[in-house]
Length: 112
Length: 115
Image 1 (cartoon, rainbow over the protein chains, first blue to last red):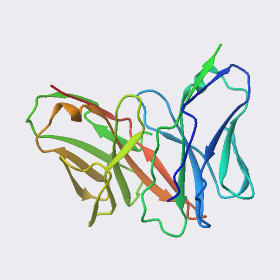
Image 2 (cartoon, each protein chain N blue to C red):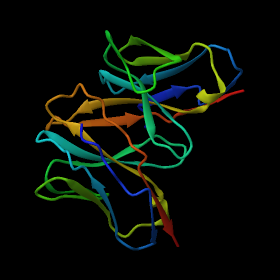
Image 3 (spheres, each protein chain N blue to C red):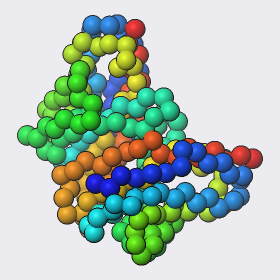
Image 4 (tube, each protein chain N blue to C red):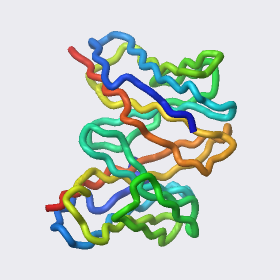
């Protein structure tokens, strides 16, 4: 599976839009992208998932450019409760026998 | 996620002791995983199981063993606990959506301290 690279940390003020970009230069044709959120002392929680273009749900948007070598998680108007670690993962749709890999993630701190 | 439970939630043990961490799920998923997390680090995979008869080593399996007693139960054992196994342990299950994309569901975690 493609290796992912994310910023180690980011800071934002409440009410701002936050964009976290993940690089996955070696992404393969069948690979998809998933983002998880983890609060302190809790297990990660699924946020959003996509293969190409744009995906939006009630929590976030995921932007994937045509070359798919990166993806951006967008959190609209963050609040203090969005302070968490965000993980970008790449999975293979056609070979589900390779376990997903969680890197160190991006630690987002939202400031009042 | 209440559908994935872990026991105990907290455990203190001494070096050399054998301990077992248990995970149960009511989601009906075939796939189950054990991860450990150390302060400031991401999750590292210890063992995973794709069905009751399938057990696979992950990135850091040394010093650990697992048992898949049933579809709903996946236990992690530390045969002889050592202090550097002090960590937060997570169990997870997963399924695949219509687009063959996997989603994992995590338990609340077990905080283990080895003295």
